[in-house]
Amino acid sequence: MVDVEIKGLVARLNKFCTRGLEAAAAKCVSRTNYEVTPEHMLFVMNEDPNADLQAVYKHFGLDVGMVQKALGAAIEDSAPATLRAPCSRPCCWTGSRTPG
Image (cartoon, rainbow, N blue to C red; front, side, top):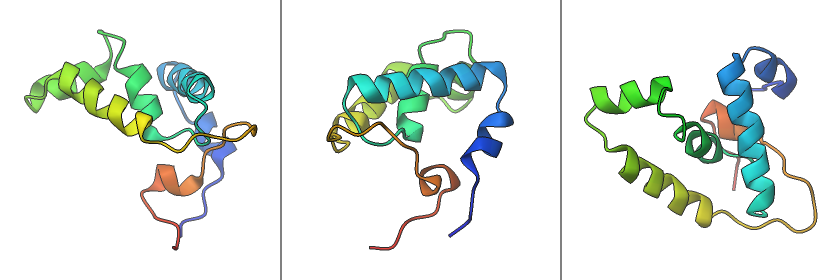
């Protein structure tokens, strides 16, 4: 597994992505999910009609509403947290998987 320092990763984000990550963490807390996942971040970033994501979807012929619906379903399927604060596992952001 690739060793990723989350603090260093966050420091490299631009303002839009930093706000997206903060909003994703807030969504994670409001949904009582344990982990902030890329799905949380993409879900909240899709809400900005001027975001680069809109151009990407248009280029690939994707319907924003369908993408949002799929992301919402993935978030809905996320395991709820106990009373712990949300976290972000490095494997969620590097594409690697944890064993087991």
